Each structure stands twice: as C-alpha cells, then as structure tokens.
Length: 373
Image 1 (cartoon, rainbow, N blue to C red):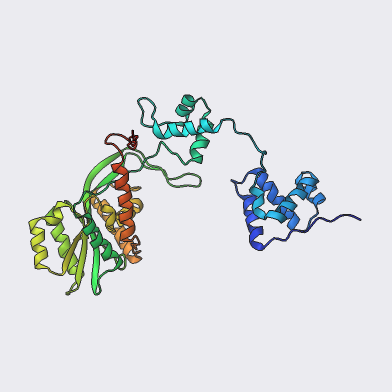
Image 2: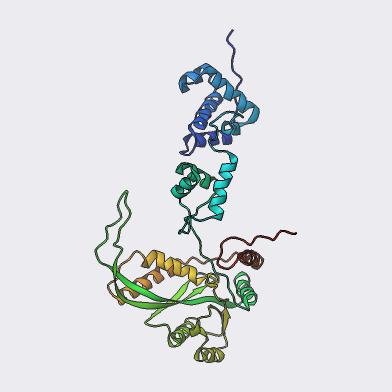
C-alpha cells in the first residue's frame, strides 16, 4: 500500500504571502523554490509529483513539507547552521573596514568611495559595497541642517506651534511670506517631450529674462492661497500686499499672520500700519526656522509643478504661469495639516545640540573622554 504524505493546510493569508515571496524580484531563488514546494503540497500534491514538477529530489519536497508543518511558513527563509557560503573575511577585518569608513578619510578627500576603501583594506569593491549596505553607510551622501540661535526660540516656537494646533476661534491664521527672485528662464534649445521609456528633456543652459517676487498668504483653515507678484520686495510692496489681505477679508475678523524675521516685515512703516489695523496680529517664527512657516511648503509645490520644468521668454509670461497655478490650486485647495507636537520638536533639537556640543570645532569626530589616572 502506497504511503501518503501528511497534508499541509495553509490559511488564505499564508498562501498569499507565499505567492508574493515566490513572485517578488528580490526573493532568493532557493526561497522561491521552497515556496513553490510548499504551495504544491498545500494543493494536495504528493512528494513524488512535486519533485517531478519542480525538478528536485523527492526527499527535498518531503523536507520542506515537514519543516512548514513544524515551524510555519517563515521556515522557508531560514538557513540551517553550517550551510550556505562561508564568509571570506573574518569579523575583525569587517569591523576594521566599518571603523575606517566612520573614523577616517582618504588623503586629500572628504569621503571614501567603494574602490578607494577596497584598495586601502585589500578587499574587493563588492565586499565594501555589501558591508556598507548591511550597515546602511552612504559616505557620498550628506544632509544639511541649521539650528536656530534665536534667544527667544522656545517662546516663538511655542507661540506658532500653538497657533497651528489650537487656532483661536472666530479668527483666521495666515502663513505669509514672499518668494523673491523667481527667475524667468528660457532654455537655449527646445526640450524633447515625454514619451514611453524616456522622460522629458531640457538643456542645462538657459537665458535670463528678469525676475519677479511673489507675496503669498496661505490660509491654515482651507489651504487657499492669496498671491500677488511684485517687481521688488521692499516694505512698500509688503504694505501693498497687507492692504490686499485687508480687502480680501473685510470686517473685524482677526487675522493672525505667521511671518519670518525678514527686515521688510519689521520696518517702522509696517509697524505703524499694523498699529492702526489692530485686527492684524503678527507671529514671528524664530530665526533660521523657515520650516515652521507652512507657506514654504506651498512654495515647494509651486516650484516643482509650475516653474522648474517650464521655460519663460519674459517676466509677464512667468507671472501668468504663477497666476494660473494659483487659480488651479484654489479651485481644489489642499490644506497642510501641522502634526508635530512642541515636546517632540524640543526633544529633537536638544539631541542635535548635545551632539554638536560633543564635536570639536573643525572636527567631525566626538571628543574622546580623558581616561582617569
């Protein structure tokens, strides 16, 4: 009498996961084969038929049937102790390579490359690449940052974040700023249009045809933007924009304005105008904290979707493009919702300050603690 293999019963979720692992491009071939063996066993096929269909030994099909029954489907990713390719380099050599990446620099250069590190350590560039990927090291990349030195940083931060998270009733919050020196750039040659398998192209060089400045106010409530292009960005133009806001929102409703510390916003003329228009309440963000003004996020949308990939032969054409984008945005506005809490921001900034204080000026490595005698 023929011996039947034990049946494998899988839930719908487990079958879906095995199918996804089998078809994923990043799945190792041995894992994909194990998935096929287990799925065939779950379909009721016997070990001999599975082995014949998958081109393996009957004992291999029986082995993975048994392992999945004992340990679940995650067993297909496990490698038994002593199996697999042996490491060519010892742990000490790998640690030395990682330490060299973090603590040293090549002579006359700012960072290591795979080939430079491979030559210095006597290994292959593929080994360096694998170790860097394993430890998530990317010496060629860097990120910029800026910590505010404003003496009233906490006070201003608390004021603006509180305004975002708990806006006053029967009042409007407007994030106001200007995007200055927007250039009307025309490419020296026509670009190629977008097509299947190829992105649109444009020449790297350009012709300048002048600049404009966009004054904008983003409504925190509904995301609508009031914009006005001006030739310059002096206090005269800023006052003109404030009068525009006064007309756009008639009545006695309070308008809370989130502003940066640009000198135009604090001139005596502007301060005198605000004193005579008490319903305008300014809230100044800390210095070097433009990320706190939500209208900057909208400026990014404008640049990415209307300016960067376009060509303009004149300033009026540029202004027309900005006004067209404004009209399209206000037809279906998307408000930017502030979610960061004050405590989380302060903790992150304190961590950054502590890290900076632990680094010597002009050096990228932390100060070493002196050994006690």
